[in-house]
Structures are given as C-alpha cells and as structure tokens.
Length: 226
Image 1 (tube, rainbow, N blue to C red):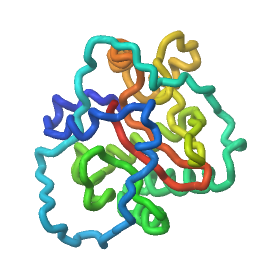
Image 2: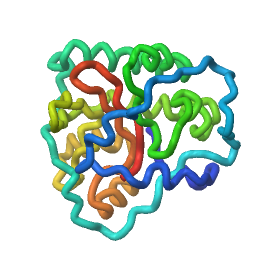
Image 3: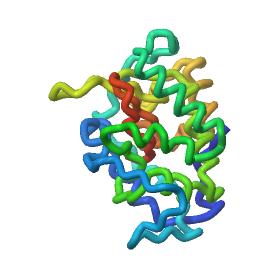
Image 4: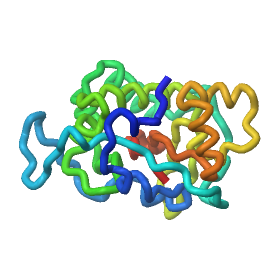
C-alpha cells in the first residue's frame, strides 16, 4: 500500500507543482501543448537542476470547501469494456511500471503527439522528472503508485470542444469521497490510508495521484494535487 505522508521521509519544495489541479478545469489537464521531446537517458538539460532534496510531498488539506469539480462519475470495474486503444496504453503503462525502470515509459512518450502532464510546473523531460522527484531517487516509488492506481476501478470523464473523453484511474479521483460503500472504501484503502482519506474528505475530494488515458489511447497525465 502506498501512503502519501512523505514529508517525514524527505521534505521537498514541490508543493506548488501539485497544488493547482482542478477537475473542473479538466481540459487544461489533458496534456502539455509542447511537442514531445524525449532526450536519451543521461542527456544534460541546460538550466535544469535536480537535487536530492527535491522529493514529492502533498500539501496538508485546507478547511473543507465545496468543490464542484468533483463530478462523482460512475465507477467502472470491467476492463473488457475499455476501448482497444485505451486498454493497450494501460497495459503498456502497467508493463513499464512493473519493470521498475522509468526509461521503459519513454517508448510510450516518443510515439505521442503531446507530452503527458506529470507536473504543473515546467518539465524538460517527464521521465527524468518522475525519476528525480520520487523519494527513492529512481522513480520506483512512483511506478508502484501508478500500478496501484491502474489496478483500481476507473471512471470516464467527458470533455468539451470535441476532445476525446478521458479514462481516469482511480475512479475516486473524480469523486468527493462522501458516502462511499464498504467495497469502495476497500478500493481506496488499497491506495491511501484511512487518515489520508479523512484529510481528502475534509478537503472536499481526491488530491492524490491519478492517471488519465484518452479514448484515442493517448497518455494524458500522471499527476497529483488539486
């Protein structure tokens, strides 16, 4: 189980990068508008420095607010109902994550038209960002989280302006987390602790990591925050 109380492990200064996500503005989370640039592993990126102190931490939950961005979309469990393109990308992400090597994500990244969102700040290379921002320094903690998310039920988020709908893991990322059934609580506890759930309920909805894949099979995001 991945608990996201990571502040006691290695405090970092990445709170701002994960603090502006809002599901009501889901179109802006579709993916980066920058073209894919996937430098080979080890290539230096001018102006980018990653220090050991830069590790993921999520902000404490503020006082509860009414957050209309949480749509409480239907919860789906049957992977057989996924469109073929979505199922293929999910399988590829799962295989890459299970390998324990973030570089295995690069093949998915290279074939895409746009860069998936992994942070709300500027990111020169998403793979390097995931590796460097993971508490273990290799990206494996985040890969494990990705697996847990995509093993959970999913929801289908409608989009506007002709954009393809997005399949979101876990389904609870679109949920205000109120009135969950016993089986739904078990789904959530596989990902976060009871204390974490209570804090998100106080906050008004999910703000841990979520994965999005659009109906065309494009990996849209793997990001946390609100």
